[in-house]
Length: 300
Ligand code: HSE
Image 1: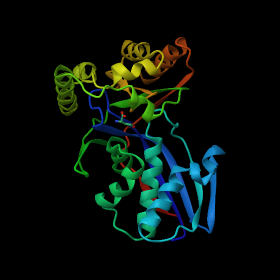
Image 2: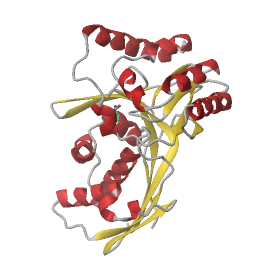
Image 3: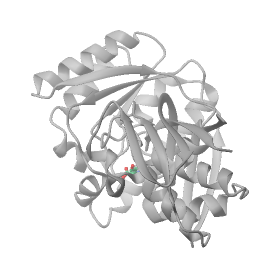
């Protein structure tokens, strides 16, 4: 086993009311190819000089950590990193690097890839199972962590729904987007979100999309985070005006997610226009729900 490749999907977390709970894998992928090597050499596609410095490269850092955790010295690796998931936009780019490195470390060391092994390493780098799990397992996932143990379930997601993501040229770190959140929330806001999470799940199960707009409202994070994203309300309105069945901030932002069964291009371009009206350049992508999760291939 000399050369391995892992392909990991982007994710969109929260889906409105399911803050720190729901995550969905999308058909947009980062790829990581690794060969045994003495020393670290990183090639990035598209070229990103910052990520070619090992200390800045999360994938390499996780690989090194996983190796040293097993009591081995990390001698290096030749890495080719193909990045399609935009960084710091709420599409789980860090999770792709973490998941890829863990899968490779397990394969190389012939360690069974248990939940324990996975989360033990993953949480050292990112405490968000709502991104990590869909990136690893694919599909729609609900998760929580209690006393260090992660509880999760994969849930069927309707095949006829696509994700239209409007990605502005605005980097927003999760850290910054969490700093604006209140420490406590009033009971009525808790009730508001619990009711919507339940409605969201039931609507998906029953395929009654007429209630998704209400089900994706939220009082936990979006009202606070939207101040960091110029045009948030306009972009969400544009999505609904053009046929979206649901819309929310994607993860911690800055991307805005619309769910739709039709009119995908119209929804995407209207969201981009709404961002542009608010002074932000943006692009949109129409994506399906990824069901396979991270895939490891042995190349040589
Ligand atoms: N649920 C997390 C948040 C996801 O919204 O902060 C972070 O990627």
